Length: 228
Image (cartoon, rainbow, N blue to C red; front, side, top):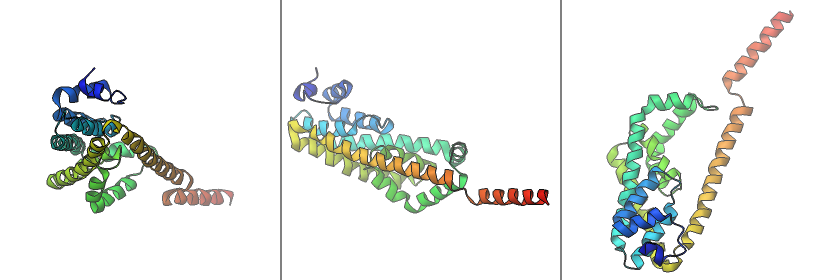
């Protein structure tokens, strides 16, 4: 058992995260957060408060924990930005156009929306579970200016990480209480996202677009001509 795991016997963190922090200290927390950005199912709501708890016991410096976890967030986001930039607009459109219920016009509207609100999406997106990782991909696809992307990502990540690291630091042995609050928050966000997707799918399935209405009109005229 690692020193961190021994100090927090009720920890819900995977053993490898405990070992990473125990071996490397604050840089280990940064590596764990970088991996969390690349693989969203990894629990940032566990990693960050645990790092704060470790700082409260003197096993790592609080400022170092904040610095390294923010650096990890930025590095993970930058990797996903690179994926979006390499993928490019044409490939993204080609892939999305093959998906059911997705139209090229929808993609173009999304691009237009991102052009207008991309900075806000990147900044506030860093504070929304799952989305905080995924938002880096469209930023890369749209080739958002790298200095702007890094600035917004750093600021948004610093705010998110500071809240949870300090919560773990102040709660001490009760740091795991943070997980329950974040879990509820995550469920609400994901439920809203699922509802939006279902609503979008329902509109697409039950309200055909102008093209569908034109085809229906043409078929009706053809039947009338044939009957005449």
